[in-house]
Image (cartoon, rainbow, N blue to C red; front, side, top):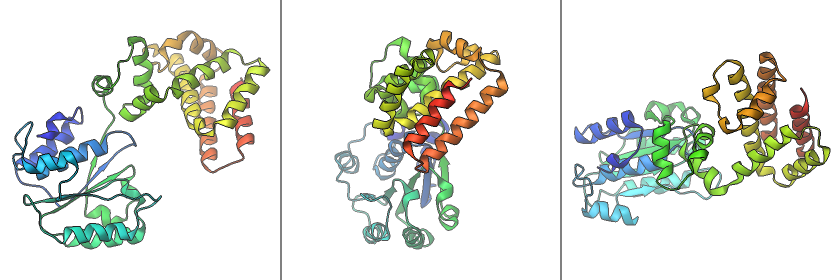
Length: 322
């Protein structure tokens, strides 16, 4: 089975394998979880096994698997939208495809990534298929927010939640793609929160590592007005980095709080323990809780398109304020 190649999510993978083995597959499933947790990877493995003519084979070479691997399997259909939403036309295209019987086996699989982007009209259109699906049709929705779907869609879909990976699983997933020095693993594992794409982006883009170094310098040079002004200009010129700066700052104050609670072995920024201790010495526990709450509030404000310059100035003042 292709599902045997999936790292982690053992309970969920086991459940999907049992559905196939015992022929208990339903008509509609949703894989939900944070962005970057691997929903599409798992969904495609499930879809391939659903269509496979020899699902118990580890490396099957049946025509269904060969065409699936090449992206030409006529019994697999993925909804694609280049817009910020999935409209009713995309769902009607799916329904037109589903009107024809399978080519190779006894199933057809339909994958809808970012299902929460379906408009209400698109969801209501899909509902018609979910209420009276052809016996050979299986629909898999991928979503970061299952609750954002219409209740009528939710009630007709089995929601399968994906959970963050363990450190060992993350090492296997990320380590298979990148050779990471041992001294960098700790921060990558803690900061990525068990989500592979977070770790992969950190490594491939490098921006997080650079921003992290700048943020820690900001704490070390809190009285250096020139450095603060340069950092301010950097944020003004690179607005896309602001969410990552908030993540890094929150990890710093969270580490300070963890340190004060006597859990030094749980630091995210364990390689910066000396600086963390220095920052923590300036705060009481209740002050750190306030810092974290203020930063979370500021991050929400940025998402509401507040004045960029004012927002950055307020953020820098919050960091400097002890």
